[in-house]
Length: 169
Image (cartoon, rainbow, N blue to C red):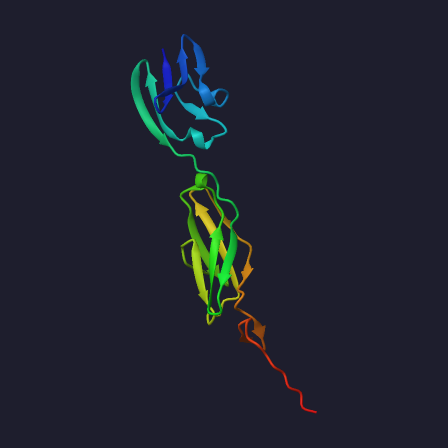
């Protein structure tokens, strides 16, 4: 009775002559059920991604493709503004967290799904947040105030406006 698990073309673990051996990065991270042939990988790493095949008594039984995806990190929102608009960028995540999707919330109203989002000065938006999502996690940024929004007497007033007050005596 023999069981051999391969990662790509290399042997990851094998059971032969009542002995179980694991190889390379898999030493200490694999568990093999010798009755069922089930392989368990503990403490998954991105390097564990790839095709796995199992041979039982010399015959290939089946294969599986494993993709290890890291959780996304909490994003930060940066912005670049002109007098007319601000471009907000959702920054965060890692290449190991792909595929990542973006979601923008303007005053808790969902809009946009790109890495950047533009807010025009005449849009009544006070607070902006972005979220990063992938198949294993999601994180939301802290709220960021819209630099083009200013509350004054209940009206929207761009911050770059100038006010002159004249007092008559």
